[in-house]
Structures are given as C-alpha cells and as structure tokens.
Length: 275
Image (cartoon, rainbow, N blue to C red):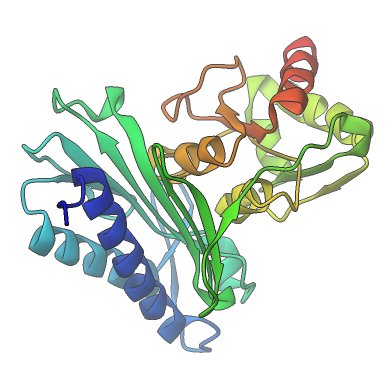
C-alpha cells in the first residue's frame, strides 16, 4: 500500500484534531460560569477559544513539527516545511456565547513554499460543528465530504439554483455591512436581500457548510480574516461551487468572500459590483 500524500496525511490529522478541539469547546458550551473577555478590536473571546487552539497547536507540533501555524488567538508560528496550518478554534464566538449551536471549529492548510502566508494557497479545509456533531471537509482533488454523527461520509455537492429570485441568501451579520465603504455596503446588501427568495443570518462558517451541501445558495461576508476563510475555499470549490472576493478573484486573502454555484455567482458579482 502506497504512503498517503503529504496533503492526505494532513487532512486525516486535521479531521482528528478538529474532533478533539470540538470536544474541548463542548466542555464550555452552555455553561453558566463561562466568562467573556473583549479583545483590542472589541470582538469576544472565551477560555474555550484559547483551550481549543492550544490543543490544536500542540497536536500539530507533535505530528508535523516543521509546519507553520497561524491562529486567531495566538498569532503566527513560522515553519520550514512549506505548509502552514490556519486555525479558528471557535468561528462564531458570538453564537457560542449565546448558546446557539451553529458555531464551528475551522482548520485549513496552506501551501507556503516560500514561507509567505500572504501568498499561501489553500490545500485543504475542515469545518466541524461540535454541538451538531457535523463535519464537512475537502482537499484538492478529493471532492467534498459531509458527515453527521457516526454515519458514513457522503459526497457533498453545491445546489444548482439558477437565479437569485429562487435563492436562499445567508450572511453572518447584517450590521457588518455598515463598516464597508462608508456604509454603502449595507445598501448593497439590502438591495441583494430584495432580489432573493429568502435571506437569513445562519452565517459564519456554518453558512458556507450550508452552501457546500446544497441547503443554501449564496453566502456573503463583507469582512473576514485569514483564519475565517482558509478552510472554506477548498470545501466550496471541491463541492462544485465558486469561492471568491467581491471582485471575483478566487482568494482567501482579500478580507471578504462570496460563495455560490457558478450561475448564481455571476449574478451576485454583477449585482454587488453595480450596487
């Protein structure tokens, strides 16, 4: 039997440690003693975020000691292998704090042959929703796979809704559009909201999971960090969809994102760029 590729080895480990980190978050979830702190940008953080990221970093260092790591809570640790892990231990901390089970643990791996994370290319991604016992994952060339509980994984495919008028649109937080282009982003979102069949804020990474499994049609974010985005692109693209910034560039480095099937993506980009 041939040895798994470097990417497959890392995907297998990412799935295992995403489960472990998710279990850590569940120890804190819906606990009345959970304390919430505010970071410099006023975003919330909890002991669960920090404990889960410490576990992820420790496990990566044990299995892949030469790999780099970038995480939301503890910054960047450079590596020499040409691979960098990108971690968001709890994506959707606000949901987590308010006891909503749609938060996720995100793990991505970038190929970084020159050591530059800013130019890194996403090779694999894992989105795990611990409170729902649901996971979706992909690596380049493997397809996207979705699993609930102990059921066997099934291949995930993006939906084929052809027009915005038939689409379910998701975002993370409508108010975040006010921060874009002196508030013009909010006007663009509200006009897009008027074009679709239904709009909801089942967002953060869970919204991208919904799109990748065909349960929603468009997910849009006006602002995101690398650790929010790195895991998402392989999952959406391997499911047959498009993941790009608001200019249509397929990247996790622009600080914004849209995910949809190819037909809808053309309509979304035309609309938001025009608005």
